[in-house]
Amino acid sequence: MKKQNTIVYNAAKSVILLSAVAATSCNGKADKAADTEAPKEAPATEKKFLSEPLISEIYTADPSAHVFDGKIYIYPSHDIDAGIPENDNGDHFAMDDYHILSMDSIGGKVTDHGVALSVKDIPWAKRQLWAPDVAKKGDTYYLYFPVKDKDDVFHIGVATSKSPAGPFKAEKEPISGSYSIDPAVFTDEDGTSYMYFGGIWGGQLQQWATGKFDAQGSKTDSKQEDKPALSCKVVKLSKDMLQFDGTPADVVINDKDGKPLLTSDHDRRFFEGSWMHKFNGKYYFTYSTGDTHFLAYAIGDKPTGPFTYQGTFMNPVQGWTTHHSIIEVKGKWYIFYHDTQLSGKTHLRNIKVTELTHNADGTIELINP
Ligand code: FUB
Image 1 (spheres, rainbow, N blue to C red):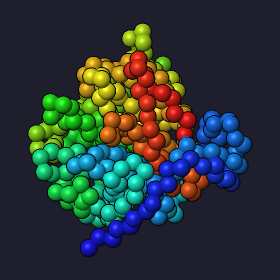
Image 2 (cartoon, rainbow, N blue to C red):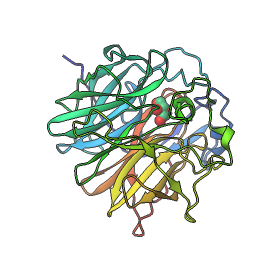
Image 3 (cartoon, rainbow, N blue to C red):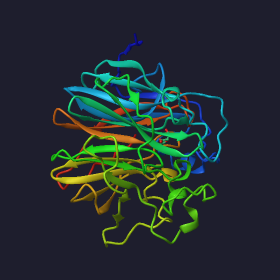
C-alpha cells in the first residue's frame, strides 16, 4: 500500500524572515540576475511571500494542476538533494520519482499519494525526471514525463493509470519523435489534445535545431542573438494518446507588429515551462523566460498559434527557475507555481498556488510572488 500524508494548507499570507541565499542558475553560473532582479520592497534578508508552500514534507516543483471529477490533482517534480554539484547541464536537478498531490478545494487539505512512478520502472530511462503533465481520456489517465535516456538525451515518455493519483505504468519506449523537456498537454473543446514541449539550455532544445540531436551543439541559444528565438514545439496527440499525430511545429510568438521575438530578447522570448489555457475563446500560451525569470503570455486564435506577445504576468520568484500551470476551479482562475522559500536552494523548491485574474480586456493582471 502506498503511503499517504495529509498536510494542512495554510493559505494565509505572511512575512517570512530568511537568510540571504546565493542563487545559482541551472547552468551552474552565479546568478546575478536573480540577486539583482528580486523584488525591491524588502531587503534581501527579509522577504514577503504572496502565498505559502502547499507541502513542506517533501520538496516539489513544476506543478501541473488539473481538476478531475471535481477534485484538484497536482503533478509536480519531486526535488531531492542528490549531492550532485551544479553544472551547465542542470545535473543537480536529479529527481528520480514523482509524487502526486490532491486537494478537494483551494485552501483545503493536501494529500500526498506517495510514489506514482520511478526512474527505475521506466525501461529506457537513465536519470532526471523533470516537469510532468497529465491528461485524461475515457477512463484512463496519461502521465507525460521528460527523462534522460541511457545516452543522456532528454525524450518524453508516457505512462498510464486508471486512477489520477497513480501508480502509473510506463510504456516501454519514449514517444517516437519526442525530445527536450516540459510537456504540457491541452485538450480543446472538440476533444483534440495537443502537447507543447521544449526547454533551452539544460533542456537541450537548442541541440535539436537541425531536427537531429547534436551532442556538440551549443549549451545555450546565445550564438544566434539577432535571429528569431528558438520556439517551443506543439504537436497533436494520436487518438490513443500514446504517440504524436504528425511532426512537432514551432509555437510562433510575434510582437504586436507581427515581428518574431529575437534570441537577444531575453525578457520576452520562450525559454521553458509552457502551458496552455483557453479563456473567452482565445488561446493563452504562457511560459517562462528562463534567465530573466519572468512568466510571460501570448494570445492566439488557434491552439497551434501563431501567438501575439502580450507581456509579463508574474514577476520573478525567489530561485532561478520559474514554472507554472493555470486552471479554473469553480469559476475562479488559479496559478500553481514554485519558489525556494523553504530551502533557499535553486534545486530544492516548493509549490504554491494563488489566484489569477483576467481583466475585462483579456489581459492578465500582473502577480508579484
Ligand atoms: O525541474 C527541472 C526543470 O526546472 C524543469 O523542467 C524546468 O521547467 C525548470 O523548472
